[in-house]
Length: 107
Image (tube, rainbow, N blue to C red; front, top):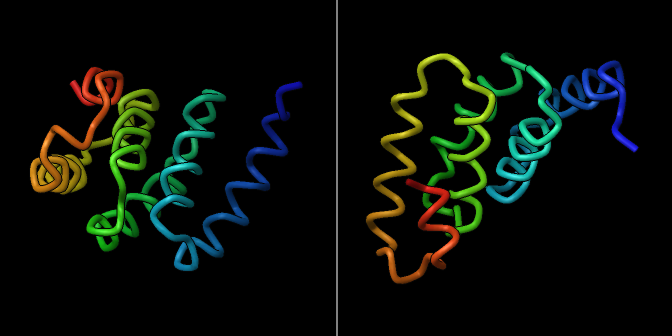
């Protein structure tokens, strides 16, 4: 069963209040969950952007893919700095650490 919009708004508010406590996986999973459900939460995505940029070096390949995908799906405002950070981290890791599916999702 899909959570209601009201439930997702409550979850988003709680996530924003604690976003500084999230690790890279928590940031990626939160972005992915909201995007998967099609929930628009611009303030939450702003917070995820800020925190992701600060923690980009701790993202693993799946976290990078999930984050990039989520931001592409929700179509949020300009995220140039985050896109550059994700791209730089992916290049730093080298494409060999990404599965074929992950490389397709980053495209």
